[in-house]
Length: 108
Image (cartoon, rainbow, N blue to C red; front, top):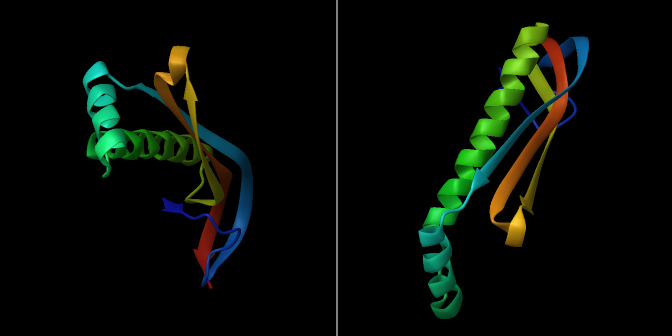
């Protein structure tokens, strides 16, 4: 499956449009990550535990979207948009949504 944020793919011709496909995931951040992220907030630096959670959530949303596109017969998704939001009480959970247009492409 080819994934792209652009509306077209260089060297490929879109032969069929299947419509919008999406993938969503919600992942909770645990108390230890919150605690260590709070310390990072005070002393500075990156929070690798939160970065890993973000990456995992993005990967799950893209995989889910790809599976939906494949089920339609698509071999690519163009115009992908990723959105990140916090949800739940006190923003304790992270939601990542991926959306794009499922298409079939062939080489020129």
